[in-house]
Length: 251
Length: 263
Image (cartoon, rainbow over all chains, first blue to last red; front, side, top):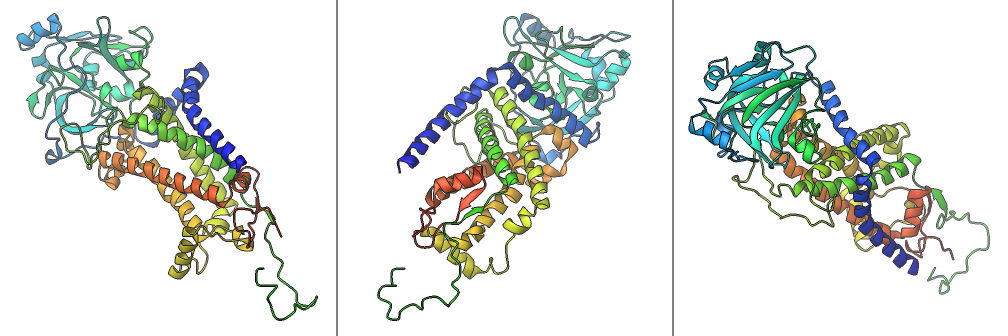
């Protein structure tokens, strides 16, 4: 009996200290590296299992979410953004630069007059919720071809108008496999209306095989780069820099 | 035996060959593959459950169907799980995901390896597969009644898993864990593009998330019953058998509690 009791006490204290132990383990660099390497395995296996251009599921109009939840920044609220918004984004320009042969500066009207793609897709937030919406926009591939993307480019970086803190603007990046995916578009309309401010007016990214934090809103500039190391925190995105979110958010 | 002294007839001295009692016999109970996988699973499922609750806390609402967010009706809203249950103990969705998505790989591949190993060493055919007559309602009912009274098989009958053990192990290995993995994959937007039939199978991403949550607690229920059974059946003997493989067959008279003692 005493053996049983002492074992129970042992198991009890073990259970209590196990979580603390796991927390401490996650603080050591080697353990982090092993834990974080799973991201690459998931990315590799997803891309090895399916076609690189495998499409995200698309839905019918009767499957739309009644209300499409806006998340993250609801209004960039900077003087610059406010001024653009007051002018109906007539003065807004999308800069396309970096490793391109022909840098571009596109107006909203120019973008709207380019060939569109319309898709009804499911937006999956990393938090766990989902919303289905209909997006209309220009395939990113069209823009990258027009700008004559250099062979050296490996990532496309999206710079946004919203600041998360005084010093940190929101930004995101994707590799070229996702950049040239047919469903990757620069969307200017949600559910047949021009983007509202909470949903990213005037232009936002849709990368349909990845989670919500990759869908950068309030786009100002698209930059082609060879490496992400020199941009902001160096991990390829705001959430990747400030927390330890995966750069590949297909999981 | 209790009735021996009052027995009217004296027992003949030698001739009748009595069946050899196996009570108290030390036997090989668990194979190496089973022991390795068992303890690896203990760690893996612990990390997956606690980090899973951490992920759940980011949006503690559950829905049926393809979509579901704050404006949509939730079928369950249990509130957030407290820090002593989640990994990490403080709220960090990103770290919970790192733990969960790396140990998910351990779970998936170790389950696959265990299934193949158990097929090759005939663990499935010899120990897990139901035998003729085991599934007859009368037999099952007898086992349930026996378990409810905490009376477990003894001697030679204790060498093999009983029908309730088999059913729960088969259920966990071939149904619960594979369904956990499949519903988990269904929540991945990348996998939705690779295997679009997954969301159809579970009726949508939010349904898969709800099923994943229900199955996680089903595994907890299995764990609780499992631990209670180990304690009732004799924790020393049971834990030893899962570490060394050696198991002492419980005696008929002394019952399960004192498997080691013989009259």
